[in-house]
Length: 129
Image 1 (cartoon, rainbow, N blue to C red):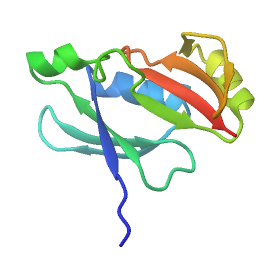
Image 2: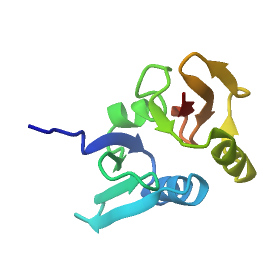
Image 3: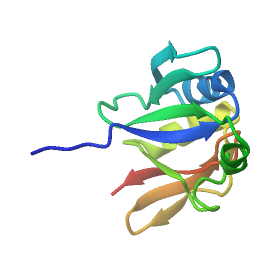
């Protein structure tokens, strides 16, 4: 038997702002953008080359969801973007004004730096060794 995590929900304040960041700044693919109702869309994005796990960009629609934007993991790093070339991707992201919260560091597991999306979610950019 094989199972995968097909999507992880990320609550966002605006679909188009989220698509803009993930597609234009991080270089993700827009996998799907389907209108479900007057206010809801099914929006999936994924890193280039990713064939399984995607991010479901979900519009916050009540006070509890709005309060969770940018703090979906209680201030910890929320998501981990693995790369085959840290220096290439770090430089490309910096050139597109992605906010890094620290300088790159080397850990026993690889080269890493924390960055933040425009909604306050923390990410690790990692090249594993």
